[in-house]
Image (cartoon, rainbow, N blue to C red; front, side, top):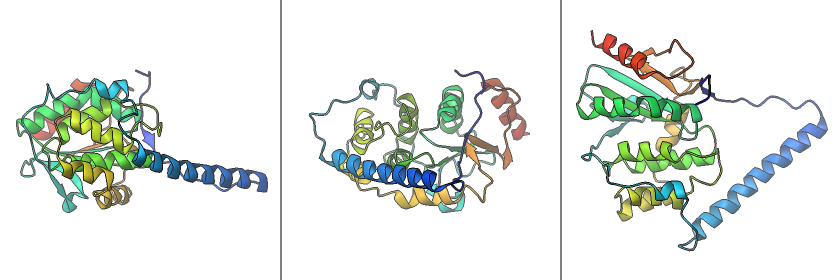
Length: 248
């Protein structure tokens, strides 16, 4: 783990200083757009001949818990809401491609799952998508896992396999395969992933970041107050203490 995990910040584009730079930037944007089109076409055309990444092959349904079906709530800015009636509320803002979000999930994921399954807290996941198209795809796929009752497992699996940003790992084909290995085999899930059926949810979460004061991921609120760790690391005991204090 890096020594100083912080946050993945939402970047902003500055003005180019000269014509050459502008042309380079325009050329790069055109290349990215063209690459996205090519990868989308290849993604749709790819078949069984394309090898499944080794990280995905390691996913299994053996550790699945009982299905838990949350809600996607407009009142919670289209977050994935567990235990909506609980007075203790924890909001987690994250992006599946954010490496610091993986550090947070590795440290706190099991604890948050316990809070959910034991109905000790209302936990709301806000899946951001500012890092790139693969963040959009992953956020859509995670939303597609909600009605299947497997958001918890799917969420955990995507962090387990997280690779380089926009590396091709989070293609629609691979995202469907992740679901299959978790026991999500319905045609409706595959269609939801491939057809971007939760795209509006993803857009609504993205547009709600600014009004909630979220400038990077992970960002966590406990009963509406930002959780700010006191060390450079994500420490479970520190997070637990903050949650317990909020129960008082």
